[in-house]
Image (cartoon, rainbow, N blue to C red; front, side, top):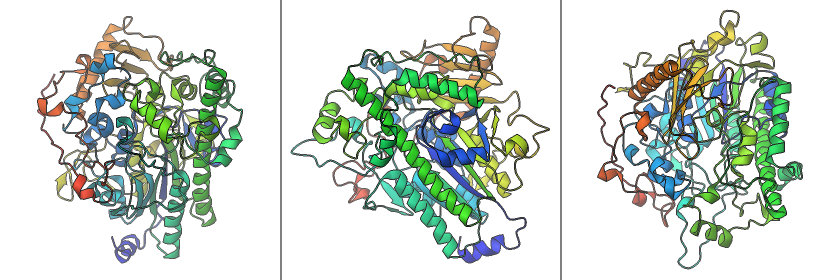
Length: 628
């Protein structure tokens, strides 16, 4: 939309429509922020929380791109094309912790199926598309992960200005080792180190120097807002600000790392206890909460580690904390600018993580062992004193992750609470929120990332084109939103204490792990080795740690909720990967080939110089779903 058209579209609008700043962290744990019980320095996010509302029962998907698809569309990620991470669909061993358990992790049946395209598909309309059409200036700086090719760029889904990190993760400093001789990038690393970006409608050929991801996105977002001001663009804005931090590889500027020297020397178990205590003091969990036991058999306990292993492990956590503080700094410089320009009061600002903390012990994965470890030893410097710099490559593992997800069970990629319950805070614009909804309050109301799009659209006064699922956008049919606007909850708290009705059914599925929630009850299916490979039933109001399985005590409720799961599968198009999750689909012969399902193989030699030569036409199959 041109500026002249935008100006006429918004002329005479009164009262002034709010602007929106949506901030997302990548793999942040529930208690990492200071205002959620952590020891990490996050003064800017704490300030937003003190002037807004913290949610203790807010949920995302169990992994990153599915959550981002839900945020962008207000509907389930299986409708939107991100039924799974395309990286996990492409290669089953990207998410396989051992050879012997490969049968539990094969994603072959999902390849090429509707809802598993690996990019934001044509069945959905994106939030920025609707806001742009309604006269908003739309901008983003940070992680996209919803498509790798120009026709999938943010610029094609409603963003006027965008500087977008396209893949799942990369080196935060943009460091790429120069390979010697016949050396090749190991399979696990092909999609884990190249900082592939787009700016508007083109690939970025070279990142600004010096580059560090969080600082780079902060500079870009601040630049977009200043440019808007300099042009006297009176349109309200929608600014999407998703960081790639603190996703591994764990890397941060030295000055932030220095703040945490020695802080984690007592190990993850002590940190877990300290955070739980502070969460109780802040009113973020019950005084008598029973935390789920730590599940981490694949790695050593703290007590069993050598002094050198402890030093490197605690340093990894120091670097992680530094990454979080750097995010906070970059949130601060954008929010401070809005305050300086007088726009903060009428801006909805929210912050969330895209899933639970990342707890994978990648050193135990077959795909990482061998060539990957040798590659790290040859091309990276993982000495203690160098950890956190651009030429280091580390993660922190399941014990530190479960210090951040406690009292919940497990972590990212699992549909237990540790994988899907995430920190969420929001500061509301003028006219929205009152009482505890406005001034540093805490709510236990169940909500999900799908609720953001309908909330923002209602605040902006913008209708969705397909409220009943029968509408169209730009001539194509699009699905409805499954989320629910928070506006009634915020504006009239005396009449409603919930965002969703008591009988609301919400489902999760990622890589054969599954869950359904209705009211206080939740059923969970976790394959071996982390689960019993059968449905379990929990009362989250009494047992938020998902410890006491009620399946044997209440088989009737379990049966009712399994039927809810069956309904969710039919409605959303889940392709089950385990017999207990529905009619198991055998992978077709055409689906069995690994590592051929990415539209753009950008990691190959010459791919970034001539992208069109490394495009791949990925098959798209049809699926006939029958009633159960």
